Image (cartoon, rainbow, N blue to C red):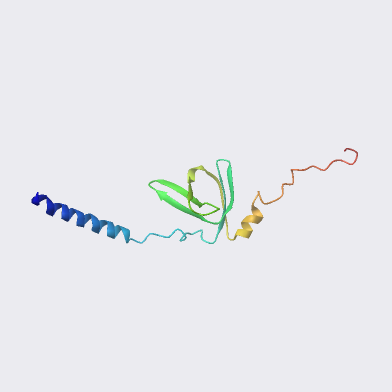
Length: 119
């Protein structure tokens, strides 16, 4: 029994050291993005997300994702693969993106004026 104690103690110290070193590595913060301060318009597979200003990109293995924070309480992130993104437009300011946004503009084709003789 005593001959197993020393290797287990050594293994525990080694694992603790490795995890401590891994925990102290510098990881970029979510706000550290090339898109910080920029607004984007996103559409994926027919789902229109509109203007978002909290976008970042992540890679896991060979798959790239676009990550959107939830709009309401920002407690969770929505991850979408980049290969399903149909439209991605980047703007310098949110006001510029809102002026371009198709959902914010009035639809000029929605109503048709009746001709003068018809009711």
